[in-house]
Image (tube, rainbow, N blue to C red; front, side, top):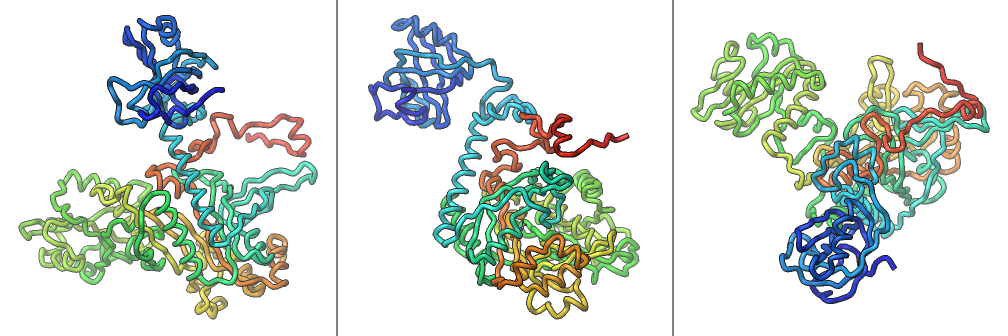
Length: 584
Ligand code: ASP
């Protein structure tokens, strides 16, 4: 028998009990007369004690053990003379009577400690060692608890988990597909699902009115901290429902998770905001509403006063940073440089300090009188001691840039606390997005999203003004989930494909199976999918989804541990009828 207890289990109540423990040697401390070992497993750490006087041989043996050796010990539980109340087993130690090395270990390439000396790349290469660290283990445990709580909630609501295939053909979620060549069907390729979208809709046609799946999705996109080429969704679909049903069931899910996994209770309903308001007030379709600082348009009071930059601008708006009038020239220059970085892309930043003595100091003092500046302050609800930060230009770009600045100010002012959760439903997205480059519409969500009923009349005449019956769940500025009520009518779906520029043949080739299914009685349906990795990251208070994935890819999409992607040999290529075109 390898163990009677885990390394996190023994307490003072177990005093004098004979026990057997197995685990990894975290640390050996040789204090001369006594030697102590911290023995670690998934559940915690237990101190092993060796006495040079009473058991010199054992003690010698213990001193020779290296970090990360796997050992089995037998001994008796004893009370510690100096207790460590920071750990659950800190009142006891094991007086060891027998020790057996199960496997030796080489010196690990980085320390298996909370504060490790290993950089990210090294830890990823030896991820199995990294997994022994508390923070990684805790992340995966949290992930497991969230998955479990999700399943419990949805099961109670009569959802059933159905698996959908991974080798499929292209699904339109707006990203590039990963493709897999078929050996048996020369020149043909499977695509990996960007989501189970079409399958879950077909399950609705198949009569499974409440489906969910915790499922891997694959999108060949550029990397960011909150993206991985393969990621996990809680994917859901329901029949015979309206938007309200979906929002209420899934608001229930999120509340259930917060309450059961995090002990956070939301007493009221999540607020809702239209896409239009989100853009106008926060410059983002995923606003962080942990703090206010909404945009205020000041065209009315700032335009046509002789300041050319404003006079030529389509849009002038600003935010009011409370209590920041003391910002120094240096701080403001740094902010201006910050907004001018290519990632933000603003041309400049106008500031107005509303000083505590009632005066104003601004970067545009040459163009505006103090009286004029005071009308801006009034419009922006500023008090003495506040700082106004104003941008102007093309509406869309300026809103984006001002949105970024708002978040940066939120960070600087400490308004984005990780333990404060501010969920928000964003609703009424536009159905379509015009792409100037290709001169065509794209579906803002995906082509199966239903237009709002009252906008259906504009589908032919003015598609750009049609809103979608779509919704996103945003928490703390991160898009945690999104979905829509679907089109279930064959003709409307056909029209949607037309608007998106598919010829009849293309639509038939790509989505013929779905259109066919809609010929046989499709129930009204809709659904949502949550980014499970993002949700876990949020719950863990971490910033990168890599931290809560057991074996993640690095930021250029590589698994550096198994060294993937990798080349394949010529025999495999031949079997697949593929050849590599060398770039010249
Ligand atoms: N399939 C969608 C997505 O992955 C979610 C949905 O519409 O249910 O974003």
